[in-house]
Image 1 (cartoon, one colour):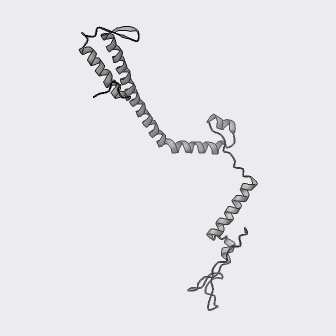
Image 2 (image 1 turned 90 degrees about the horizontal axis):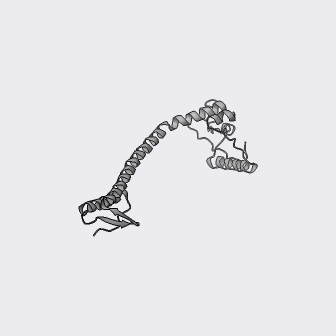
Image 3 (image 1 turned 180 degrees about the vertical axis):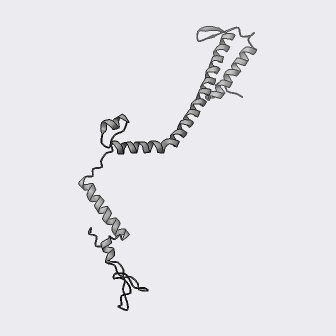
Length: 179
Protein backbone atom coordinates (compact mmCIF):
# COMPACT_ATOMS: atom_id res chain seq x y z
CA UNK A 1 0.00 0.00 0.00
CA UNK A 2 1.40 3.37 -1.00
CA UNK A 3 1.58 6.36 1.30
CA UNK A 4 -0.34 9.57 0.60
CA UNK A 5 2.78 11.59 1.41
CA UNK A 6 5.54 11.01 -1.13
CA UNK A 7 9.18 10.64 -0.17
CA UNK A 8 11.35 13.73 -0.01
CA UNK A 9 13.75 12.99 -2.86
CA UNK A 10 13.23 14.82 -6.14
CA UNK A 11 12.67 11.77 -8.36
CA UNK A 12 9.97 10.32 -6.12
CA UNK A 13 8.34 13.76 -5.84
CA UNK A 14 8.23 14.15 -9.64
CA UNK A 15 6.81 10.64 -9.99
CA UNK A 16 4.09 11.40 -7.42
CA UNK A 17 3.22 14.66 -9.20
CA UNK A 18 3.02 12.82 -12.55
CA UNK A 19 0.65 10.27 -11.00
CA UNK A 20 -1.56 13.13 -9.79
CA UNK A 21 -1.62 14.55 -13.34
CA UNK A 22 -2.46 11.11 -14.76
CA UNK A 23 -5.32 10.72 -12.29
CA UNK A 24 -6.67 14.22 -12.96
CA UNK A 25 -6.66 13.71 -16.74
CA UNK A 26 -8.26 10.27 -16.42
CA UNK A 27 -11.04 11.55 -14.20
CA UNK A 28 -11.39 15.05 -15.67
CA UNK A 29 -15.08 14.44 -16.38
CA UNK A 30 -15.76 13.71 -12.68
CA UNK A 31 -13.67 16.59 -11.32
CA UNK A 32 -14.83 19.81 -12.93
CA UNK A 33 -13.49 22.15 -10.23
CA UNK A 34 -11.98 21.91 -6.76
CA UNK A 35 -11.64 24.49 -4.01
CA UNK A 36 -7.95 24.66 -3.00
CA UNK A 37 -6.56 27.37 -0.70
CA UNK A 38 -9.78 29.33 -1.05
CA UNK A 39 -9.69 29.39 -4.87
CA UNK A 40 -11.80 27.34 -7.24
CA UNK A 41 -9.57 25.57 -9.77
CA UNK A 42 -10.50 23.51 -12.78
CA UNK A 43 -8.85 20.20 -13.50
CA UNK A 44 -6.87 21.86 -16.32
CA UNK A 45 -5.52 24.50 -13.88
CA UNK A 46 -4.52 21.77 -11.42
CA UNK A 47 -2.62 19.88 -14.13
CA UNK A 48 -0.88 23.14 -15.14
CA UNK A 49 0.34 23.77 -11.57
CA UNK A 50 1.60 20.19 -11.22
CA UNK A 51 3.29 20.30 -14.64
CA UNK A 52 5.07 23.55 -13.72
CA UNK A 53 6.29 21.86 -10.56
CA UNK A 54 7.64 18.88 -12.54
CA UNK A 55 9.35 21.18 -15.04
CA UNK A 56 11.05 23.13 -12.25
CA UNK A 57 12.31 19.87 -10.67
CA UNK A 58 13.68 18.64 -13.99
CA UNK A 59 15.47 21.96 -14.53
CA UNK A 60 16.97 21.73 -11.05
CA UNK A 61 18.16 18.18 -11.75
CA UNK A 62 19.89 19.11 -15.01
CA UNK A 63 21.34 22.29 -13.49
CA UNK A 64 22.68 20.27 -10.54
CA UNK A 65 24.30 17.76 -12.90
CA UNK A 66 25.93 20.61 -14.82
CA UNK A 67 27.13 22.17 -11.57
CA UNK A 68 28.56 18.86 -10.36
CA UNK A 69 30.44 18.39 -13.63
CA UNK A 70 31.83 21.92 -13.31
CA UNK A 71 32.94 21.22 -9.72
CA UNK A 72 34.76 18.05 -10.80
CA UNK A 73 36.46 19.93 -13.67
CA UNK A 74 37.51 22.77 -11.35
CA UNK A 75 38.96 20.33 -8.80
CA UNK A 76 40.92 18.52 -11.53
CA UNK A 77 42.32 21.79 -12.88
CA UNK A 78 43.26 22.93 -9.37
CA UNK A 79 45.08 19.66 -8.68
CA UNK A 80 46.87 19.86 -12.03
CA UNK A 81 48.13 23.43 -11.46
CA UNK A 82 48.72 23.33 -7.68
CA UNK A 83 52.51 22.98 -8.02
CA UNK A 84 52.69 25.76 -10.60
CA UNK A 85 50.81 28.25 -8.42
CA UNK A 86 52.86 27.31 -5.37
CA UNK A 87 56.09 27.84 -7.32
CA UNK A 88 54.85 31.17 -8.64
CA UNK A 89 54.08 32.38 -5.13
CA UNK A 90 57.51 31.32 -3.88
CA UNK A 91 59.26 33.08 -6.76
CA UNK A 92 57.28 36.27 -6.18
CA UNK A 93 58.03 36.19 -2.45
CA UNK A 94 61.72 35.69 -3.18
CA UNK A 95 61.79 38.39 -5.85
CA UNK A 96 59.97 41.09 -3.94
CA UNK A 97 60.93 40.07 -0.38
CA UNK A 98 59.70 42.77 1.98
CA UNK A 99 58.22 45.14 -0.60
CA UNK A 100 54.77 45.08 0.95
CA UNK A 101 53.10 47.25 -1.69
CA UNK A 102 54.34 45.13 -4.58
CA UNK A 103 53.40 41.88 -2.86
CA UNK A 104 49.95 43.30 -2.10
CA UNK A 105 49.43 43.78 -5.85
CA UNK A 106 49.73 39.99 -6.15
CA UNK A 107 47.56 39.35 -3.08
CA UNK A 108 50.54 38.15 -1.05
CA UNK A 109 52.00 39.18 2.29
CA UNK A 110 55.69 38.99 3.24
CA UNK A 111 56.87 35.95 5.14
CA UNK A 112 56.73 36.38 8.89
CA UNK A 113 60.01 36.09 10.73
CA UNK A 114 59.77 33.54 13.51
CA UNK A 115 60.73 35.17 16.79
CA UNK A 116 61.36 32.84 19.72
CA UNK A 117 61.03 33.90 23.31
CA UNK A 118 63.98 33.20 25.61
CA UNK A 119 62.04 30.32 27.18
CA UNK A 120 61.43 28.78 23.77
CA UNK A 121 65.13 29.13 22.90
CA UNK A 122 66.18 27.44 26.14
CA UNK A 123 63.69 24.63 25.54
CA UNK A 124 65.05 24.13 21.99
CA UNK A 125 68.65 24.00 23.26
CA UNK A 126 67.71 21.47 25.96
CA UNK A 127 65.88 19.35 23.41
CA UNK A 128 68.87 19.42 21.04
CA UNK A 129 71.21 18.33 23.87
CA UNK A 130 68.89 15.49 24.80
CA UNK A 131 68.70 14.37 21.17
CA UNK A 132 72.51 14.35 20.81
CA UNK A 133 72.83 12.28 24.00
CA UNK A 134 70.13 9.83 22.95
CA UNK A 135 71.59 9.33 19.46
CA UNK A 136 75.24 9.46 20.57
CA UNK A 137 75.89 12.19 18.03
CA UNK A 138 79.44 13.51 18.02
CA UNK A 139 80.99 16.55 16.44
CA UNK A 140 84.07 16.32 14.21
CA UNK A 141 86.44 17.23 17.08
CA UNK A 142 85.08 14.42 19.25
CA UNK A 143 85.20 12.00 16.31
CA UNK A 144 88.86 12.85 15.63
CA UNK A 145 89.79 11.87 19.21
CA UNK A 146 88.53 8.31 18.67
CA UNK A 147 91.34 5.99 17.59
CA UNK A 148 91.71 2.26 17.35
CA UNK A 149 94.03 0.23 19.61
CA UNK A 150 97.19 -1.23 18.04
CA UNK A 151 98.14 -4.46 19.87
CA UNK A 152 101.64 -4.68 18.36
CA UNK A 153 102.52 -1.10 19.05
CA UNK A 154 103.64 -0.56 15.43
CA UNK A 155 101.95 2.05 13.32
CA UNK A 156 100.24 0.41 10.37
CA UNK A 157 99.06 3.50 8.57
CA UNK A 158 98.55 7.17 8.96
CA UNK A 159 98.38 8.49 12.49
CA UNK A 160 94.91 8.22 14.00
CA UNK A 161 93.80 5.35 11.75
CA UNK A 162 93.28 1.95 13.35
CA UNK A 163 95.50 -0.92 12.29
CA UNK A 164 94.09 -3.82 10.33
CA UNK A 165 92.39 -6.41 12.49
CA UNK A 166 92.31 -4.16 15.53
CA UNK A 167 89.12 -3.27 17.25
CA UNK A 168 88.44 0.40 17.82
CA UNK A 169 88.11 1.63 21.35
CA UNK A 170 84.63 2.64 22.37
CA UNK A 171 83.82 6.31 22.13
CA UNK A 172 83.76 8.22 25.37
CA UNK A 173 80.26 9.13 26.50
CA UNK A 174 79.44 12.79 25.94
CA UNK A 175 79.25 14.81 29.13
CA UNK A 176 76.09 16.67 28.17
CA UNK A 177 77.80 20.04 27.81
CA UNK A 178 77.55 21.76 24.46
CA UNK A 179 80.76 21.85 22.49
